[in-house]
Image 1 (cartoon, helix red, strand yellow):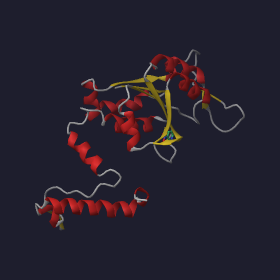
Image 2: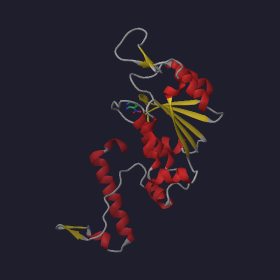
Image 3: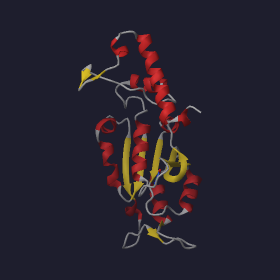
Length: 225
Ligand code: JBE
C-alpha cells in the first residue's frame, strides 16, 4: 500500500518510522511519504491560509497549494481522507475497509479547516472520505491521521508478525477486551484468578467471555445495545 500525507507539519509523521510500521516500510509493505504543503505555494511568504468569506473567527486554508499538492500525488486508485471532527466516525470496520486500498492520501488541515472547493475538487478526481477520529477538537488533522494510519496499516498482511493476534481480535469483535495476566501468579498481595491457572480451556474461555461482557456493559453499554 502507498500512503501519502499532505501537511504543513510533515514532521508529525516521523513516528511512523518507529517499531512495526517502521519495519513495514523497510520491507516495502507500506510506502509512506509526508509532503510539506508549503512547497506547493507560489508566493514569497509561502502563504497557506486566509480569512473566510462571509466573516467569522480564524483562518482557513486556501485552495491553490492544496490543488497543486493533490495533483502531485493522486492516481487512478487513490482514496483521499480528510481527518475532521465534522467527518464520519472512524471505526475498526473503517480501518479494515481502507486496509485493502491501493493508495491512501491523508489531507491534513490546520486552522479552522480547508476551503470547501478543495474537498469538491478531490471528489472530482478520487474517492473522498471526511473521517473523524473522535468528538474532540485537535489542532489539526495530523495526529488523527497518524492514529488512522496505524490502525489501517497493522491490518495489512505481513505488517503484524503474529497473524493470530489479529484473529483473536476479530473473535472478541464488538466487546471490550477481557483482563489479562502474566507471571508472577502472585504480586504485591494480588493473585491471578484461579481459573486462569486451572488449565481448563473451556472454563477459561467462558470466564473471559463473561469478563468481556461485564466490562462492556459497565463502561460501553452502547456497544451491546
Ligand atoms: O478527529 N479528527 O479527525 C480531527 C481532525 C482535526 C481536528 N480535530 C479532530 N478531532
